[in-house]
Image (cartoon, rainbow, N blue to C red; front, side, top):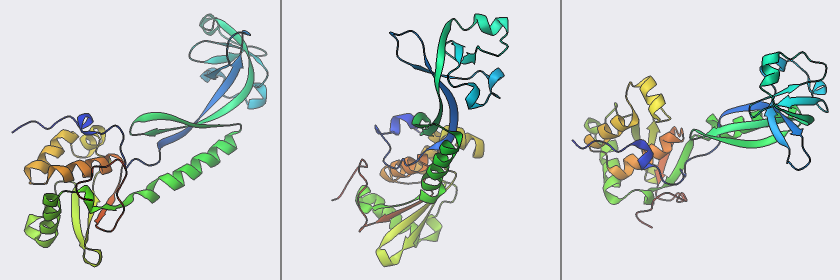
Length: 248
């Protein structure tokens, strides 16, 4: 048996199924100006001063290093922290940065000037890009003929159904399409080790050994990696930009 390739090697330059962000959160940052010839910098407030409200931060002098800042006026700072902050500056603005992750990559989505505005943005992004957009309809042109025959046989013969491969197929007779329910998404090593006790490479090999066409395995992997739960292959659906096409 040939070992399955590493999951990372199966990814194209970008995943066409990727939509929205995971782990949306807010970070309070201080915009600091210092020496005239240097551009402003952004630093988080040290945990020891996290209770300070915005009006006790903005336009106050501070100490900072590469990792954090401390308000120096009217605040007690330990000698240890003082020695760790060689630079001085002035806090010009308190920023609420909205951060998120896509396919385990960290992204800076925007800056707001109050916690309330940032919370509204996180709420809207979560609604638009969370569990409400996990169903996809794509063209059957993304599968070669052999994979399409496999789908037809799978939904026509109950004895071919494999329920341990983390996907289930069902027929859509009116549109001559096939639906696929993806289970245990996202198919990352971390998640699969937690729920199945095995990395994605093992799951992929099991799917291939069970006769699942490689082209279908690849499409399901990209969809599951983006946390898609329902994928429909329809001959009348639009093609998905960035996904391989086998038949126009």
